[in-house]
Image (cartoon, rainbow over all chains, first blue to last red; front, side, top):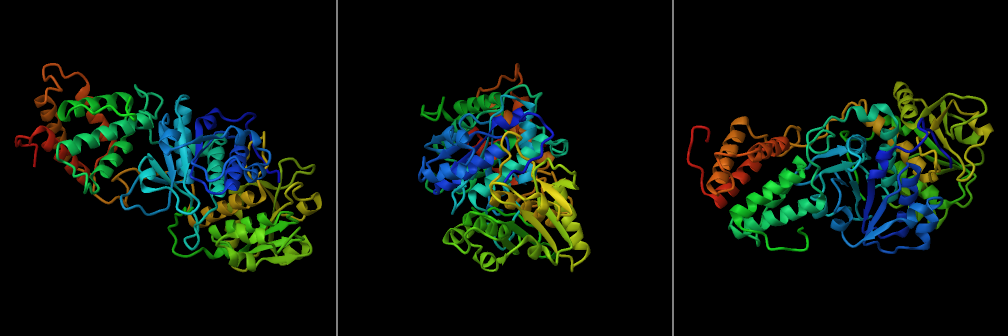
Length: 270
Length: 270
């Protein structure tokens, strides 16, 4: 069915900076449905992490007129690979986490994502969607700067995966093409804002820092690797919330090296 | 995937007054997908007019946990029969009609539909969705009080039928369960929000932490007190931005004590 309304002649550039990442989708139909959902909302960057079956005729059938988006879909072996170069990572999630995390509705997060994409045209943003049955793991959710929740009935909040992608992309498109949605987004308080002096650290840089931090804490006897508790999660949440820039990460790693010894070089480091 | 957020305990009554009418859907999967979409948004009244194949296993499969909605789906022989008792009828539509008709975006129409349902609890409202390929006919559109358009990319505005149902039901649910929908753009991102698990650190606790941090950095040779540069300022900015809570400050100070030695007691500490 054809349903359209747009006051813009062309597709807003900011939408091209946003990728949708499907983490371990089991049904290829959902990959095709997601590709179509993206294209209807002016988006084109789909990434799948460890898909159950892909490519697959069912994905092609559900993609309908979005074969180009489907053909360009990137397949990654891990979430880390999918988001390595991203400055902002958002994960779709249910309501209750044991440790509260920055959270917003689809509409609120869309406004913030758009304002950050509009502020810096080199900003790379990922929105993660979890498995059909079990969503995103705690570990995956903790790699996100913020969690996105789709308002839904408490009696049956279980949206189909491609439907959830459609709703989120719809909010993004609506926000990108209307004046009202984005103006409210005022959490300019870090490298996401246009006038910050350094670029935001990428997901890869952040992960290397967290690995270094953990190494130093274990090495210094602060953290028992057999029984880590919530300490590392809480530290991760704190730093993720602050959206560190590249220089800040350099300083923090300098502090860690000075106080706790250098990090043994690993593949996640660079 | 489970995605939920609702501040309401029960489903708003107004949503029970709204039926979704699929006019001559050809794919049974779309009927099942629509049933699921309704249920995730607290709605339960689905009507199909002259379906291509229904009931059908494909409809059941796509309905997932919304079998009850699917089982209760009413089959009608005509649009007139489907909407006979309705006080308000809305049709989803493309942009250009030869004769201009009252028209609104999904969000605008949702607000109007809800306000009418809330005003009279005997009001019956139908939202019509057309055929997968050709939408609603001119004759059907002229039976509607208003036309609803989903904002979409001008390059490919062709939403899947069940996806369009999902987006419209989502706008209805959002409108029914939030006061204004947009006003709430208060991205919860730290202890300033009501549902954080720990209170924000006080200014005094923060200053004691910064003093401890500086002490450790100077003591460890990372910082030259004669020539500190911007390092401490940048670290202060980073932590302040994160709005640490009490527990996070305790952890950070524990790390400093473990790695850099305890802070000599000062008046700013407690």
